[in-house]
Length: 521
Image (cartoon, rainbow, N blue to C red):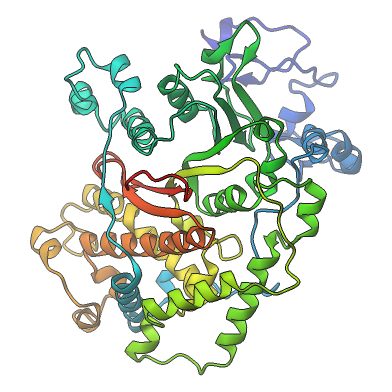
């Protein structure tokens, strides 16, 4: 509908809300066209200055009434509501913060060619030493195929045809649900906890795959306001629903105290594309807070959001590292200790905690499995990362880890950058990311490239293929630290490529199973 024909009250604000397709309904001051909120947005001067709300910058308030506004702001009301809940424990899943002094962060563009070459060589060696091969296992569950395909013999990719990339979300959901099915996790009597649920689409398809199960429940965790688009599909008996929404940050979630989880026989934690540190906090939430104890006791047993045992492990690692000499460029210090030595150290430290370590109550809600589709490793931070002990064991400092996360973005950004440059500099022979077939097929040693072109830094000499390969190796190194964290909790865990890379470059899922699950993996 045209703006000029949209009905508007004569006394209302003249600011048109495109998303809502109507005018603002607040009343402006006498003689003005806009309400105070939109007058500030339009730059209209007033007697009193308005500033963005510090709690939520999407709206503003009067500067001289800031304290009054904060008390009645909707953000404050929502925060007070969940802080009073039994399952709120501030920072319980954030992780250990070894020092208040922030590590020095260096951008890739600020590195010299020699420094970048040394880091890439270090990544290559660590990847070859510690990272296991990731198998490609793609499934298509019938719950999705029956709604999309005309026949059972047709696969989803063929049904979508040239629009397969546009329908990537459905392909991802089908494969993720298929992974759960093959691992015997779609049984009756389970409580599925979806972290970072958003609209709840993953839980939607899991529910459809388990529609014959009568005693399954779903807990959907999301910190922001979203459209609960899929929840309406799961109404049972009028107003009752097997879906329970929790609006809270994963960082503060004491999962064991959630009412819906307390009565569950088995708990399965899932998540689709939890960005960066949210994955690590989700892993802690699933492995540490799922215990039979009140929130107050959990808070008392934590320091900076991590367990006493994790802090003890960090102290042992720090003492061991402080007694070693500074790093050199020799191969032994690039690779760190051998795989056998590292495993021995981890087992010794995990199974020999300090005598005064507090005992966690035995869980009455056993964790059956974890499935999280990984993404956005460049948003990982050292203070939230769950694999700190692993990284320190192989000689990666917080500064090195920060650089590792930055390099991980090459896995998904290189092709996009190359395409953009090709479109804008078709005739420019100096374009740094041209996907030349002869360039892509060559596998150069990074040290050999340093002096190949004195006018360009090393990062501009690497081809698209090389940048992507380096980025993927960085991602897998970060994920390997997460696997070691889960193994220290007694879980069987592994990585899988659950979807083809042509559909989405973020195509790896982390799966962890309890020791009681004997499914062949």
